[in-house]
Image (tube, rainbow, N blue to C red; front, side, top):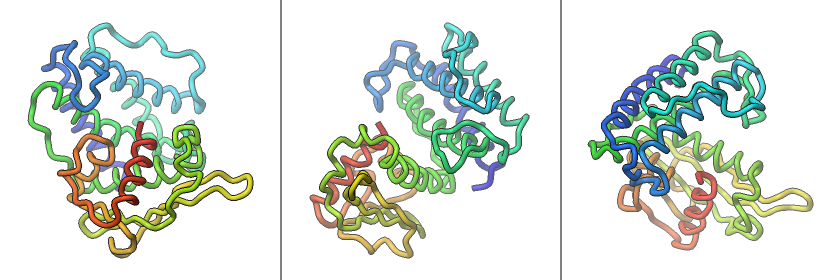
Amino acid sequence: MDFSRLLGCFEDDFALLRDAVAAADPPARVPSCPDWSAADLADHVAKVYLHKAESIRLGAFPEEWPPGVLDDDPVTSLAKTHAVLIGQFSAHSPEDRAATWHEPDQTVGFWIRRMAQETVIHRVDAELTAGRPVSPIPDDLALDGIDEVLKLFLGYGSTRWLDDFGTLLDEPDERPLSVATSHHAWTLKAVPGEGALPGRVHVEDAKTGFDGDALVSGDAGPLLLWLWNRGDDASVRLSGDPALLKQFHALRTAATQ
């Protein structure tokens, strides 16, 4: 997706998120994140927005946190921090430097993509909390989100956040698993550690969804939500070896916690 399209999606989903938070009771529980209230959800998103704005402004991760921009009112806090973040996006080109957790990509563009994907997931959380119908996720945004979850959070994340994966990659089942939607597919393979190198999940684009011993497939929007633990197994299609599917469930849960 190009950055103008990602920014457009970000703005659309932020408007839905803000309106849903405004419609929800602050103490209401978030069905997709039961440990959070509606106020907690708004606070989380506001802090994420502010942290990314500072990471762009400073070109480094902020040391003093959080700065005093947050408001006691969840909707006001969201609006303020969104304005700060948009201000940083507007003041920079996507190619400009920004501090990110993804070492190969230290650019503002990384955060444009990440915040578009962060916002669409949390606006679904907010809509569920407010008892509203979940608005559709555009296919192109969902497809990009699936690619991000698999390659960045699972593939790259398995090499960076080792503690989150525990022993899952010590002696994994190395058979390939496919994830597919529409006309795109990915092949995933858990690889054990070798010497001083830890285990990891290797992810690559595939020509078809039939390259693995198990397959997870579905429409792009529901599949994205399932990968982020916002949908049950009935929202996607699972086929192939049950043990491999169970391992994938554990790996993607570790990657998205």
